Amino acid sequence: MARSIDYGNLMHRAMRGLIQTVLKDVQKRGLPGAHHFFITFDTTAPGVEMADWLRARYPSEMTVVLQHWFDDLQVTDMGFSVTLNFGNNPERMSIPFDAVRTFVDPSVEFGLRFETHDDAGEDEEADEAEATDGDDGPEDDPPPQDAQVVRLDRFRKT
Image (cartoon, rainbow, N blue to C red; front, side):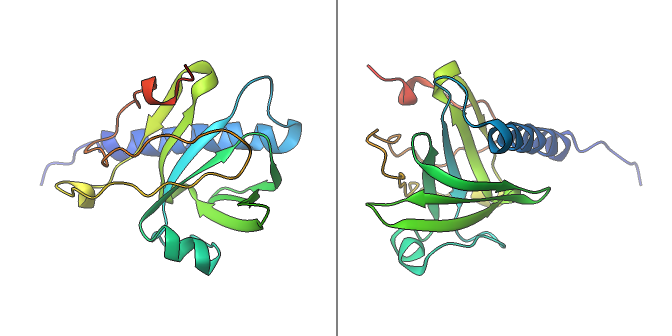
C-alpha cells in the first residue's frame, strides 16, 4: 500500500502550535497593545472542563474573548486554562488545543479555523459566549467545512 503525507493534519498541528506559542507569550507578558482573541471551541471535546451551567447553555460550541478581564492563564502542551468573568461570575475553564475551532485576533486581522471531518454536512449554528468586558462578541456563523483562514470582516468594529 502506498504511503501518503497527511498535509491536513500536519497543518492543523502547526496552527495549534502557533496558538500555543501566542498564548504562552501572553501568559508571560500579558496582551500587547490592542491584541485580543476570540476563541471558539467544541464544548463536547474530550478534556474540556467548564462550569455545568455554561455547558448547559453552550452544549456544542462556545466562543470566549481574552481581552480586558481574564486571570491565571496557564498554557501547556495540550491546551490552556483560564478564569473568565461571565456577568460578574468568575469561572475557570480548561480547553485542549484539539477542541479549538477558531482563533481570531481582530486587532491585526489574523484568524485560523479548524474543522474535523465529522463536521461535514452539519447545519447547526455555533453557540457563542463572551467573557463580560464590555465588547460585543462575534456573530453566529455555521461551522466551516475545511481548515481555512477565517473571514475577519465579522470581527471588525465599525
